[in-house]
Image 1: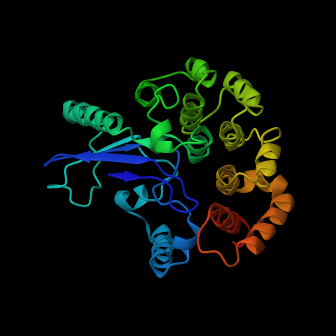
Image 2 (image 1 turned 135 degrees about the vertical axis):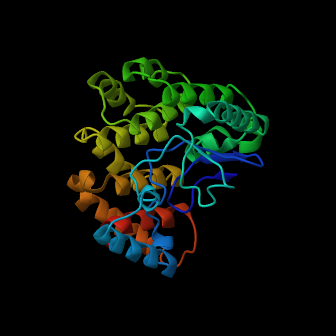
Length: 297
């Protein structure tokens, strides 16, 4: 089972199951299970769900209900559907299920590598490197898309007690995907060390725009917005549709932290709304929706 971007909402989740268990690997656990999504949020279903949330906040939520709205998710999930059909009891941290967890984790990675799962390549990167050919063909090149190494590094970062300074070499890796997924890991942390922030500030001048945008988002996520916000604001004017959407989504998710550039971003939002008023799909439309979540609420 796989899940990736839906309109402006990015997601990378993979899952495998046996007859007894279901394993879930969240590659973007810094994001909540239910993300803001403009088109979905105006639907009757989501309106009812948000109404139920407001009611539950007043009367109290069960642990299962609360898990749907947490700001972050577990990196791994393991469920036994026969005894837990609603999958509310995560067994991933239970030592009694360690062997099963490790087996399914390995099966998930093996499956991703076997089928060369391209979901760990952001669209901005995927289409930049495949100019003149197809992403399918280009991403088969392990020097371009080192999927086994990305999985290995991701597992090391998330599933061991890695200190942030130990991740600095990955931020200086020659492959931008290694840099990108290391920054995603950093977004999952509770704080950002000064030494790491110094490296990220240098990444604001990176030649890969998707790395620059992610570095800016990571810095500002931890309140280090003075140098990073201008890069995000500039990217809202990008002619590259993939970078535009990444920047708009980052701007949205930063919330009040992005407020110093609201006036400038509102100009870009109005321009995008006018440009896409007759569209039903497209990256610029999704970018407009993302900014609408900021300025229409």
